[in-house]
Amino acid sequence: MSHINSKLLLLCATTVAFVDCSNTAINKKIDMEAKQETEVHSRADLNEKANDLIKTTPGLSDDQRAHLTTLRETTYADLDRTNQKSIKLRAVLIKALVTKDDNEQEVSQLKDRIKSLEDHRIVILFDAISKTNTILGHLDSEKRAQMMNNVFDRGSNRE
Image 1 (cartoon, one colour):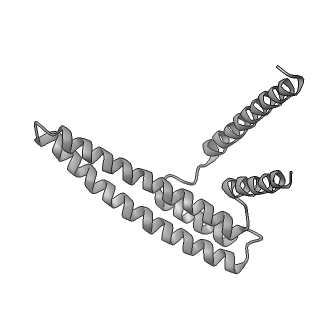
Image 2 (image 1 turned 90 degrees about the vertical axis):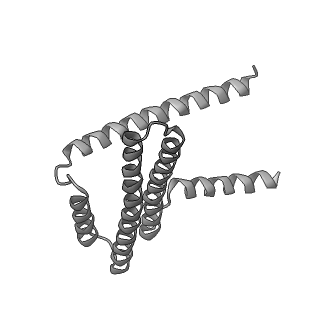
Image 3 (image 1 turned 45 degrees about the vertical axis):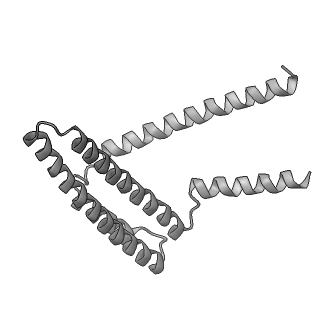
């Protein structure tokens, strides 16, 4: 192995170890904050807390507050619609499991559809996070990665 390759390998290993340690520290911080969270026990509590934070967080402009409030309302509406569909399918699944003998295909289809709705729920949440970052002027990690790729792509085109 060449000297340069061994240095690159060492750099990559060190970077992975650093990121892993960093992630562990972040996860410990998140776990501690979640344990200390005593105000939120239900979706209604979460809605109230989000509303309070939007209204009272210093440094937000009136325009940001309005956009965040609208985003929160549309996100909750989308989540409610998705949840209602999921609940109905779960009811059909329970009925199929309890009342039918030969239901393997139906149960499989129901499970797939429920999983699809749950995946869609996550997409809704992650989309809201991305939109929140945009409203607040933060770059999310995907945009940051794309910017870095663009920088490196331009640099490699110069050679």
